[in-house]
Image (cartoon, rainbow, N blue to C red; front, side):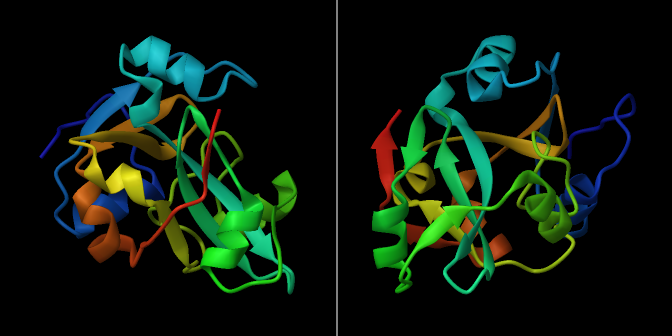
Length: 163
């Protein structure tokens, strides 16, 4: 397991350790509004392998998480169709933070405040390794994406739009 003495634990890393998930720690210099392009550049990895954790809600304001490639956008129409909802939209930052327990820009799908349904863009599961938020701004963890369905109950969907 990765040793991260210089990085304090987050609910996300605690969750991963509790579930015996091997992960690598990747701190980087966070830039406000920099998004996955900055983290990919700082880590020297393809932005397609940097995964965004997006907190969204359906028409009844029920929250959900979507995991998407850093270089893609979510088609909310395709997502709503895939999960049998009328509509899906991003949560406002303060609502997303209330649901997840994480500051926007540091949202991780692991160790959220409430258990939320998680949907993952199907092509993410085929990658050899992904870099996903570790629970704080400027901190990603590298993991095997094949673990996501068992770990999070993540359901595969096809809702990516080229970025």
